[in-house]
Length: 269
Image 1 (spheres, helix red, strand yellow):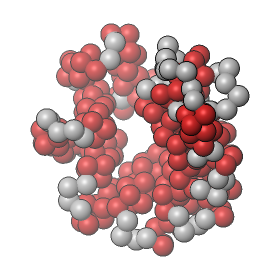
Image 2: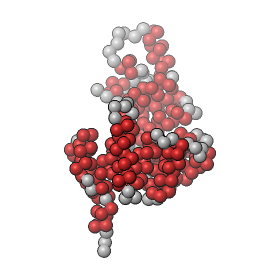
Image 3: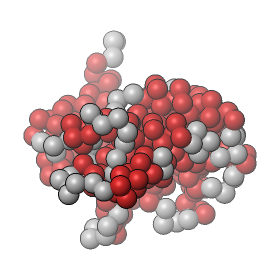
């Protein structure tokens, strides 16, 4: 049962354990629960747990309460923005982060998260402007370099994007996001063999590790590159191992639609 169904009638937030069946509360346990309701870190932990288990509404509620207690805490604001985005409210998240980023221009993590949301919202030019400012402050931060590459790729400037990925890899040749995004950028510019040449070894390196997010990103990238190449068999094999048949077919249809040859065939003569 979703946490919201268990806790929605309460007038103050409780720890997750308080939602389970427990013995009758004593004055001490009641006091502890009330203290937890005023502890932004405890509330954020509940919000993060809810986010990880897919209970987005609860995540928004508890992060929102944490932020209300400590609006000065950027880490709590970022968690709240993450919960809002996961709950399908990216514009609300941006409405929270953009003014916060303006007040804290030296906070690299805040700039990165805000820029990522701007890119996802179809505003890559705004993201690029923010990232260029972050780059001037932190020219050796690989996260900023990779984010700049993603923004430029989104704007269709693969050559410039690859330059930033190369800078990131010069600083850290093992940087997984830089390697993955370099491969995608190469594929977008039609260099499929080079893209596959990066992703296949990277996939092998990550196999058997606990780097789930990186593994998922590399698998998704491989499926996309194979799809752009027109190798639907290889792309489908990856997708069907990771999602339903319907989702896999939707992805394959999308890959076929964005393939260069497909775009040329659809363009007016």
